[in-house]
Length: 303
Image (tube, rainbow, N blue to C red; front, side, top):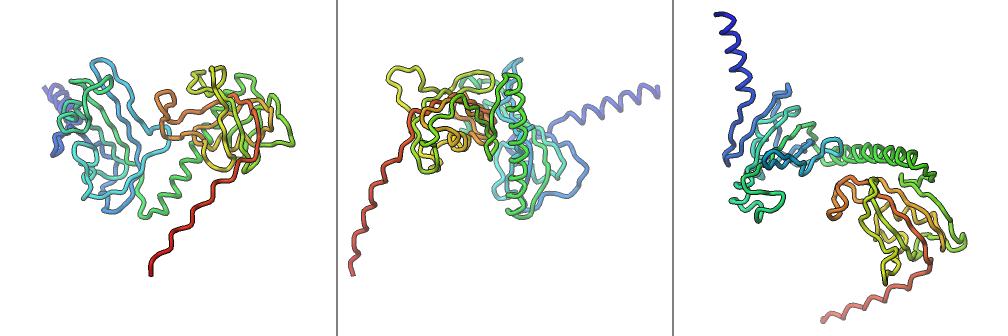
């Protein structure tokens, strides 16, 4: 009898651990405590990891995740607490806690949070979310310092991944000051280098590490070179650094860690967040760009 009682007690304890509460807006959630009892304070800056997984029937797919990359940051403001999202229950949480929650896609549509059902947000589906509360900061300066540290950690991880890629492919390349890599098949004309202020006309093909091409002006009828003025920041940082290694007529490859590319952002359907990018390039020409047209003088004001 005692053994049966003990088994029932354990079963009830496990069941209670798996139970979800409901927020005011009806969002199912549970908080797994991390040991701290200190609640978040108004105005603090929160550092956290977050993940959203879309669940449609037996198929789950990651919609977005910061785990393994740069964490997310936000200012904790009780007046700005969201409706039907994890911020609604942050007032119950402490640093070290883990929050799990579920969002009904039907409810999101009814609340106007998604415009309509589609191939990702399907009728009857759900989004499973989880948040790990990592740390809090009292000032924006401390947040900026922490973000810079996390960005550098991420970039170094991406550089190591590119080095492994180059080793596997037998690519020998030079490293730029920022952390991109340049493989020179032909350095081009040393007297017509792609220096600061010069306009570089480039034919290129861009692809990800798995070989999927996402953009190119090579081999397309009527395609023209892409003109880039070095130093204008009109292209990703990896290109700004890599193109400087070439002169007119140069050919080669630029390998760009994600943090010198599009970083945490996706760039269309073919470039997911945190994608290392590779570009085959040919420098068609290096010229001095025409000066910008003079700015019109402002009309005199009436006195």
